[in-house]
Length: 417
Image (cartoon, rainbow, N blue to C red):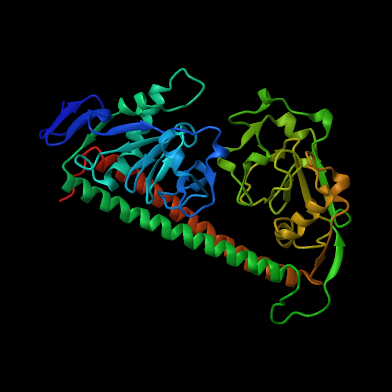
């Protein structure tokens, strides 16, 4: 039953005064072209024509405003000209993500362009429409059964699109743009906070800056001599069919490390006999974990553990012997440039595919002479991490709000006065 004032379309109920049509009937869609061999057409001269490539956009970009390369005018006829305000879509990379052009130029055959749309769509509304789940789900349906997700002119032309008049489009786009501004502001603030934290780590973890009330020369320790370092040994290797969705014990793997913590909600589990098999890798709160396979040297500090937990074969557990150091302080050492520089020196230009305990045995670093100073430094860094985490949670919530707004506004379920 369609509620009053709405009509049923192939992609759901929309307001009676909205339109539903095939996208290709309302706009012009063209594929780019590539003069070949391209190196014969590239130029550094000022008269060159912007040559737009996927490398000219960064993650989360909305506009394309500059290019790294240009082509000579003779290449234009063998390519596709695009202009300020045109849209371009990647055929494969980022799968249909739209970009608005702030420059004139030419596109190669890895791009599609959407032109001559302004009688029907406002630029900002069309950007949000093409970025929406309404369109993305249609792309997914078109690609069903294919292992390669490539767009072409026919698929984009076949999109079913819904839209109100231009005035309402502009109101919708303005509301979504306001939320985008909030997202952008949070992203910039988080980046700034992370940069500040890196600077503080650079000073506090190397004794370049001492906290008030502390003195005494920092001392060099060897991590392995002051720690119990263990991992699952070979004969205890787990197979994937032992990874359970629920069970007696968490099974922590390197993929469960998220921003220096364990993502308990997404951990697998193992049966009790696997947990009991080795007490050395039964982890507890304040243990330091470090990956030895895959993404080497990722670290996490165990917090919030409320049930048994053990490790898979790709992770070391590190625990201080007789409170020889504060584990949170050493976690920050292992998360910092100090340990990264050690790994870089260890590899000496080659790619390390496995981190052995004999490698960790070589790791030495400076540490404050008292546990109290170590904890004071760790507390400052923990507070900064907590602030960043709170901002990231706010960012995630704002992005969710935006997705909900897009779903409501771009289908007419909510109308803006």
